Length: 347
Image (tube, rainbow, N blue to C red):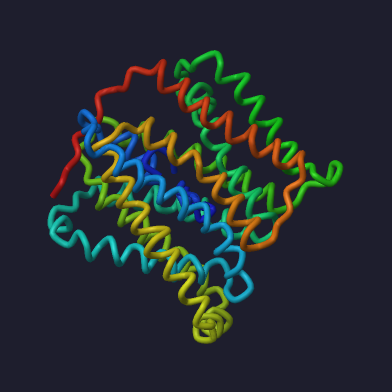
């Protein structure tokens, strides 16, 4: 997830997918899952471009989720929105993998619940934040999680990182400033909310990698459990104001139902399953670099569909954030020797 809904909030990131999302959302969680758990075999040259095309489709879909989430905000509250979207996405993934559910382990269930809670937090902040800022800003700001991952690893896990990560982090922060300080030193509240989501997303990626390394896990089962937890979280928070939530759901216009269904099926189920497949036949770095185009598509959709205006400084800031994320992933991947991955359980 967008995050925005986009994590949510990813094969190489958390729903990111944000957005995370993804997506958005969102993750913006399964991106990390694909990187930390699934070891891709040697890439198949003849079919790699098809995989890249599928991942590019995920980036395009996640880029559109920021606009979709902002538009749907006029009809439905954040908890009810998350419940409907992720119940649809989780249901699709569960129905497509029924045979895999015969061997759910306690470890898979506990990890799915833990990271589902984190994913819910990411997506809640992304969905809320995009309502109080530009959709284009949200797409760029959530990508800061890419730069935060190595810093969190360095601070909390004492991991060695490439020296060039530090200037790239400063570059991304400069881009962030150009994006958010577009009216003097006043910052939109939505920008701060999206930044909080980016921090949690980065922490989720690091935590998933450390907890899942060397374990036998089914990414499909863990991912589906995460999505069901997000849906359950949305339902639980909706019950705080049951009359309002029921009224919103029963009075949603038809086009709003179509948008939420699009986010649930394309922005969630399709995005997560495509990433899991790509992690097996391509490399996490390759997948991550393709997904790094998500903020660009978020800006395109925001300008075309919402008539948002990006001034020269905002365009420069977005370019700096995107460039630093791209180079940061490339630099980090070049210096790392991948640790022995966990064995992927397919049944």
